[in-house]
Image 1 (cartoon, rainbow, N blue to C red):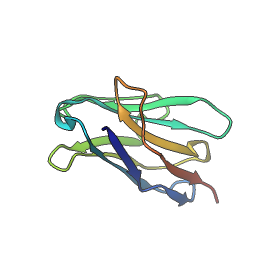
Image 2: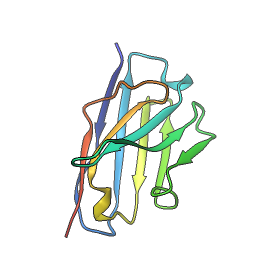
Image 3: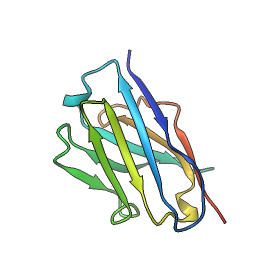
Image 4: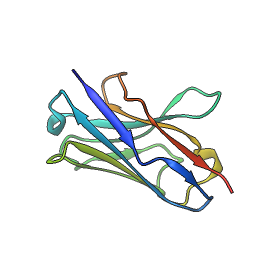
Length: 114
């Protein structure tokens, strides 16, 4: 079965950085487009970024453009999200998912606060 295990979240000060990871199993990761989504307290799930199966194409929501970088290592079945210049409104639970699926892992909490 599909398994997605996110990690790398934590508490960081505004302006800081975090690198999220997502280890995938149970499906053909190297041929699957992947996505990061997030859910802030009291808000709905929102798209953050997506990457094509070969990593050659990436897309970002406006708030992530220029601050976040999505990448993948198909040899390790791992998806990444490098987040720089974090802001308090980036506080959320971050999830990885197959782009064309609603299924997601347990998520990793990111809290940006001084």
